[in-house]
Structures are given as structure tokens and as C-alpha cells.
Length: 106
Image 1 (cartoon, helix red, strand yellow):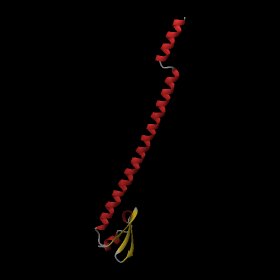
Image 2 (cartoon, rainbow, N blue to C red):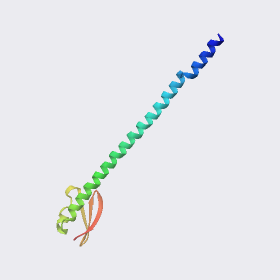
Image 3 (cartoon, rainbow, N blue to C red):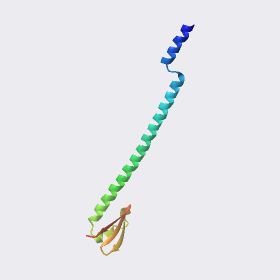
Image 4 (spheres, one colour):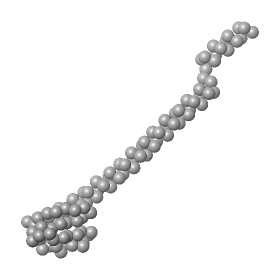
């Protein structure tokens, strides 16, 4: 019987116990869940950044369009496509296209 106990002890050292397997599986689950959360969050941030960049490009394009207009034509754009034009001086206007830009007439 003594020999049987020693051989079982050697097998225990070589094999994983149920507790070790459960602990390993739990750790892997926690790590995988953490990575999933990080990827999900970063994807959300990327989408918001893309939307802000697209809006900035759109505003920039509209401003470039408005810069090509004469002062009189620029004042006629007030209220179109969400553009607000506020005269400040005889050759200075404030243009609001989502954000505030100020420019002088050419």
C-alpha cells in the first residue's frame, strides 16, 4: 500500500486539479472580458472622432465656398444651410457654420 500512495502522489504533481482548471478558466474569462471592453470602448471613440472630423471637413468646405463670395453675396447667404452671417463692421462679418469664424471682405 505504501507503494500505491507514492505513485498517486507523483500523478497528482503531474496532473491539474479541478480547482486549478477552474481558477485558470476564471482568469482567462476575466482577461478576455477586459480586452473585449477595451476594444468596444476604443471603437466608440474612433466612431466619434470620425464624426467630428467629417463635420470639421464639411464646415471647412462651406467656409471656403463663402470666402469666394463678394461681401454683398455673402450677406445673402444668411439663413441658408445653417449659416448665420452677422455684420460687425463695413468690411467685417461674423460667420457661424456650426462654430464661429470671423473674416474680412476681400
